[in-house]
Image (cartoon, rainbow, N blue to C red; front, side, top):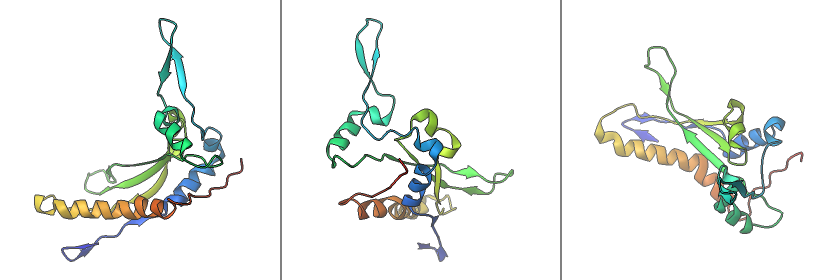
Length: 165
């Protein structure tokens, strides 16, 4: 995208490469859950209560699993980003985008190797309000390239990811 005669470039890799990186890590894959798994706990009264501690425990996961072919599995993609300071003076910042999977239990997902770097978002550094729309458009275009377009391209047939398991 070009704005005020400056070209902004999205440095990234495909979302599918990031997913494959995580799933090819045997230390991560062995903990992945691909089937709906409702969880229950016993409360103080001795009654069973539903526990929603993971994405694969949620009603959403159950609905998603029932809506796809029996041999297919749900792959829950989590994308997140936060600006980070890259120098000790606080003048250089980057905006990395990471990917992880809801199939990985949260205790494992929160370890550094359970995240894959997907991209560095381009930034318009001007903090004036008049640039807010351009910043919004740049972010939306980046997310379209990173997430929306690739996912939409496999929406009808799904994505065939083979694993060793």
